[in-house]
Image 1 (cartoon, one colour):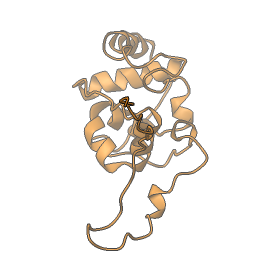
Image 2: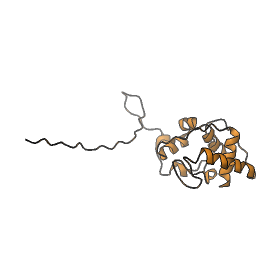
Image 3: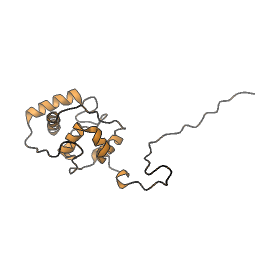
Image 4: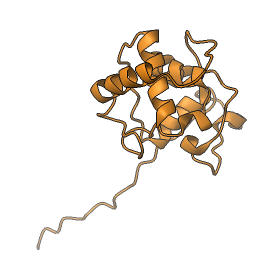
Length: 154
């Protein structure tokens, strides 16, 4: 007699969203959890201000001094995950203000943990970018505003 190892079939594991209470029949998923055919990074939502301290941002002519400061901050704190003009670990900031409000962008910079927890679009972006959450770099509001100004210049 010979001993033959039987190879178990490989199972692919996919993340599952469970809606409901354990032991009860699952309920229909809320509409906000149903995926759409448009990638989160391409969705346009200029009304959403996000979750965080920034309620209003007034944009005027681009401030070259703020752009320079924002570019320095971006190079030092953000380039491990973001490239200015192309997708990387996180989305590219070029053109972001054509898709997001300035308040949303600043709140994402300042408050990524709560944005991922409480903002639907931030949750969708997290899933689109392989579950890699944005790190909180603990920037001040002034630094985040400078980064926003740099994004405007791209």
